[in-house]
Length: 222
Image (cartoon, rainbow, N blue to C red; front, side, top):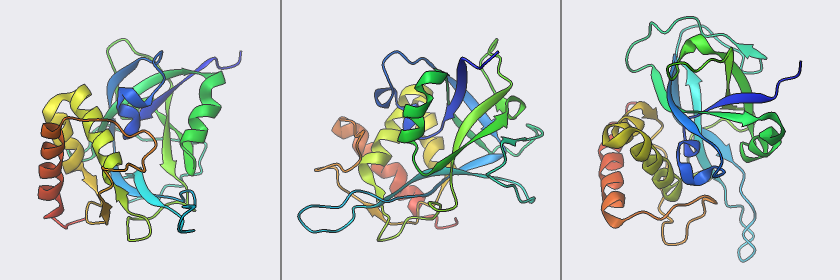
């Protein structure tokens, strides 16, 4: 019998409810043995006025262990949840009708959609799945932020607000603290957001996000 639904794990902008279709339901989950990183280079569209390509850097994840793992493997197995506290990612799982998968794949252009065994996750009580789909930057798009591929402030805002809504203030703090690559270039384009799913946030929350990120960027250890 063919698969009618897939379950995917969102760990960045997909956590923010405003970036997904209104009919989708999500549930908090935790993935062990991986870390979130500013490590996906997006080739943006060409600016008609300058002819320059408006590229940026977004989030991906990396496996945390000492053994090399091929991201092209059809089914990536992650053995045990017995990992240090720092080696996990909070996010959301969403059950998606299989006919809607091409739309999600298009949104996640430049990523490999891999399968991770569900025993690598803490899932909601009663939720059952053999494996979870996760998007990881492919070899052609992987890379840290720099002048050519800056991290967009409007993207940071969207992700941070999503974590705050799902996991409260502590969740937003953990998103910032547990993500590596903050020493890359950040472009503050809040006044004219380039991120296509930018969200409107109150000034108080923007101030809080800035404080968290600035404090994290003082620790250039990753």
